[in-house]
Image (cartoon, rainbow, N blue to C red; front, top):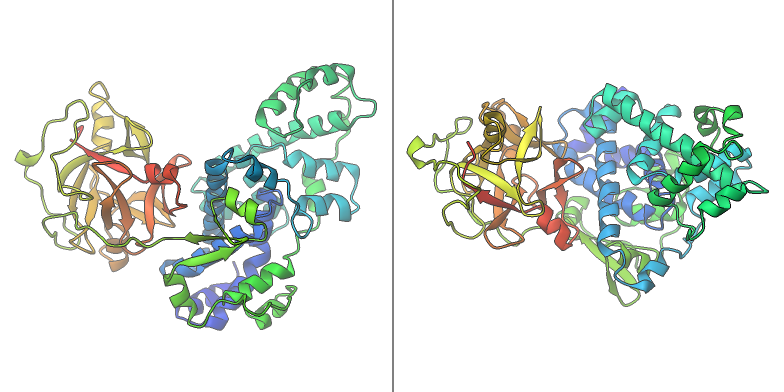
Length: 513
């Protein structure tokens, strides 16, 4: 990220609206390309981009390192893509009408189709785009990031920072993605061959035409050992060269207009960044008031296709689909009974810690509260899995009476009064580190004594999805809660589904250590 952009971040954090708009305009093409490629041109691409930018603007004041804005932006983008996929799964299969809505074409062609139809690239480039649709969702996201890396818009360090992985681990995951992409290229070429391999025709009897992992594996079992289907693999152009020959996706004028209507982008900033603009219809712009006040309120997004939006978690209202993001809790229920000194947790007398047993519930407390003292937090969504940590990052792990002492110790936390608010709670691990969120992911850190650390390490409990459980809201982002997904514990806004509520709920158990 260049120094000018770091300066824009600092100015935007200080409340400079023009700096904020210039920042959004500068990074909108990157954001749109990541989302557009990762979602393969789904009708909700524009909505995911808008959701991402709204979250970026809301959370920007808390960004500690302005020079890390790009990787921070990508990190939020990946989480919004993940949220979109979760919403799709949650509503999949509920209605045949909704299922059919996924086939409704967007007002403009899908980005992948635009690439195929308009770019007049070689057949191999077209096949690479088609092969990307056969990838698993996580690999499609990695392909999107790798695409931007090849174009020089992201660095490997950016990808590592955004995904919370080491550079070496990113390299391993990208290599696995490339292997699946090469396999998918073979599948696409084999299916398009004329004449097609007779044995392949037999192998795909019953195929419904959908690009699923099951059929990818079935077809691959044939192509791997078939000299006819694998004949083209030795003369392929390396995929890196093919991707670099594909033009980036252009940000549609309609999206620019929608962002302007929400107060996120001005026509001047859009024009300066070379973004196409379009007139905004009367009545579509958000009402008056500052962007800050709009974000604090309930934020709404109207999608282009009502039925598709419904499938993504929206509520159908008179022909338009509207859903609310980042719902604020109606109230906070105090969850502690004593206040610690900032930076120095209130000690818990050993006599108050009950010996661990077979995962019994902690002594009864007021609904939505977390008792002080040693506790183990069991996931409602994944019974028998407890909040624990691996290295610096929080995750879920299994624990039982037969587990090692270290395992039982890692699923046990000392609950103290919140460092930033004594009505809430803070969690202290056995090694002296605290649970705190940073870049929207829960991790363990030592107390640096700052006000920001105290805020990040303070969580306010409310009643969870089932009786006796709690949901933990971030003190400085009350509309976001701790939720397990993708192997970690993240700070996310609810999508309104029961699945999300379960993933964001924990039952307080007596300590295992």
